[in-house]
Length: 144
Length: 169
Image 1 (cartoon, each protein chain N blue to C red):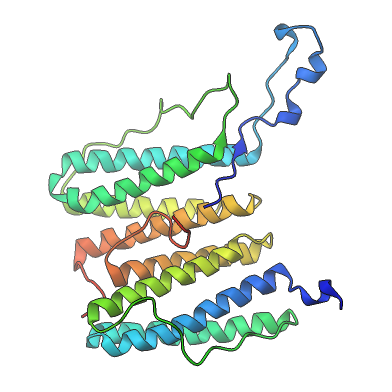
Image 2: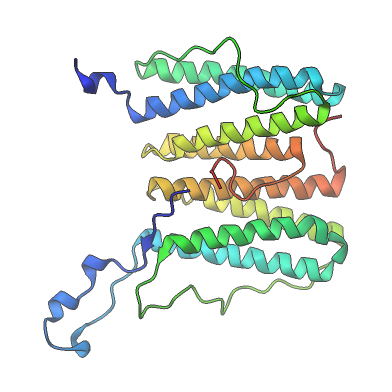
């Protein structure tokens, strides 16, 4: 077996990680949206739609690198029960932080375009998390 | 978080080897710090300025203390993380001097204070994103995370100024 051929390039591996986080967030926003009030549900719907477009973009980026985009799972384990609008907004903030963490994986690459793009995406995630939770954190996407 | 540091002096360039046994007087001109060191020092200085702004704002607008104090704490965490990356050899200045750090003026009306801080946060976030090229992967991740935090601060401050919206309604 050719081990080198089985090891994905760093950029493809990082993009697969982002794609997995996006697929999880699409699922999570679907759960959150069902528990939110009308205005917030509309915001969740917008984010959900944008994430679907991002999923397609990531799949295209991976295909261009000769990698097969990982498929979404049928369901994902939620980090906590979501039975209220407050829990739904907290979930949305959590999903955005997990997305930021995945995008920071792109920032670790040497490719300046992916690094810059990943940083901008992580920033957008942090902003959306703050809109959902009303709070900020010192190091979005990084473990404390 | 990976706290691998950046040595403030390039060890290989220290002219001790060339000086042989001629004593301290023969050590010559200290080497220039590498570009990552200069970048880190710039980021540290920017955090110091931001912290000064928040302290002035809080002392001048006590009504904003509850909003601004958590953000100030996060900037202090940014400063600590950046300083932890800078390994300063003994004999070198231990930290970038705070002398000459711009002192912001007195705080104005709360709405103006929030607007000014939000603008400063956005500018700081943009400045960090422009510094990512060529730095180590772990430092790039730290800078990008701090930039994301500062962008979210701007969002928080602007939201507080307008509606105080939280995303559940």
